[in-house]
Image (cartoon, rainbow, N blue to C red):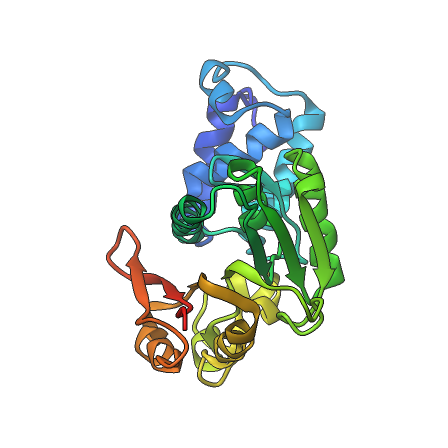
Length: 296
């Protein structure tokens, strides 16, 4: 970037967009804007009124380093340390998955089912568990919208739980949440029962994993993505555990891959659960399974 012409905000964005495009970014302009806004410590929208400004050498140096790492494949969210989800900014690092917009469908479904259960028992605080909470996006989003609930967040990774706790504190719901290190529900108090069991578990098969974008395979935690040879192994374990942990009439809500929807449906024992329902994303792909525990 050495030339007599000034490196204004507008010029930096134009050059970086082309550079990132050549290096495989599928959203080069957005990447450039997010990285430059982070380097300038400003909101992205503020760049549009600053095109003629020339950032300081300190800002340009920080920006160049992030652009270099982005061109090498590091996800933007890890470079800037946060990602927006459900209209909130969540801290992320390489101990947790980067939030995807598909998971918002699970949050919406959980809120709808919570309202349904609340109408049935309006004077009782619902008990909810977010299994494999990661950065805490599901648990925190629900706590922001369901302040009268008791929410437990579990994860097998101590490092992920630290991130989730910081996000809960960031959004001022730390006192509404409890965090437990657990392999699914195994280490949760034996007597605990829940109205809603929610999870965005690992659901990718080993074969699928090998076909993922390199930036995902190189940077995001493999254990939070891969379930096993079939992709349904962890979901199968969760369904089995949930059968004994959910209250009659409660709901199990799980994010899934459209590739395993049929297989997941076959795992739901109709002696214990009503026929599962499936929710599609905006592209028409199946993303969420909801199953209600039968009231015997």
